[in-house]
Amino acid sequence: MHIPDGYLGPATCGFFYAVMLPIWALASRIVKKTLKAKQVPMLAIGAAFSFIVMLFDIPIPGGTTAHAIGAVLIAILLGPWPACIAITVTLVIQAFLFGDGGILALGANSFNMAFADVFAGYYIYRLVSYRSKPQSIRRVIAAGIGAYMGATLAAILTAVEIGLQKGKYSPYGLKEALPAMAGASILVFGWVDALLTAAVVKYLQSRKDTLEIQPS
Image (cartoon, rainbow, N blue to C red; front, side, top):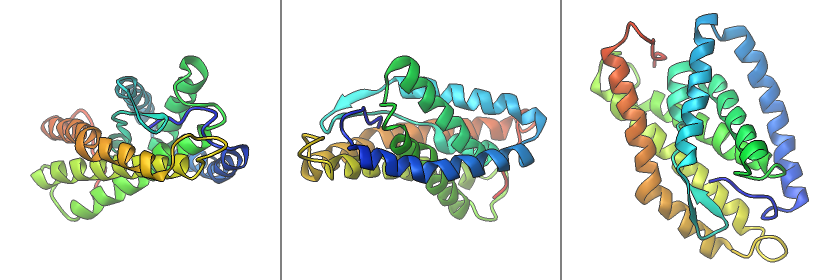
């Protein structure tokens, strides 16, 4: 789901940076106020987990890649604002050190994966797991559903952003990008994200002394 440089115009890249700058600023303030000292190592581990699962990306038609993200898992464990920071850090490292995703497109990639995926997936999880017990299987199912829906939304947004640039920047329009991106997430990578997230939540339910899952 990483958009490389050259597929989005300067105006589009600037727009997404303008959208994400206040979100990053707000996320930083909230994390400083709410994140406990004992949770800081878990935030780093969450970012590392996301970095690793994103390494297993496969090029697909539409000028981008498909992969699991792990964003909703971090949001479930620490909250959406820390997850926003963790995924952004992961995307920055990938863009600057590994060339995975463009630097100019960092704002758009962050909007898709660090914002839309995180918040949509997290609140879907909260909705499905509403008033369920911490050890309930409904929490596990809700985690999987949230991860699946969040990743799929990110894929759709990526496809739309690329598809609308057809011509001067992107060689692919919505007719090519949307089926490729959405199809890859709906059929494969959304499920990978869902299964990973549900499996970790299920494991942590049995080890509640290790980490407290965010209440719903």
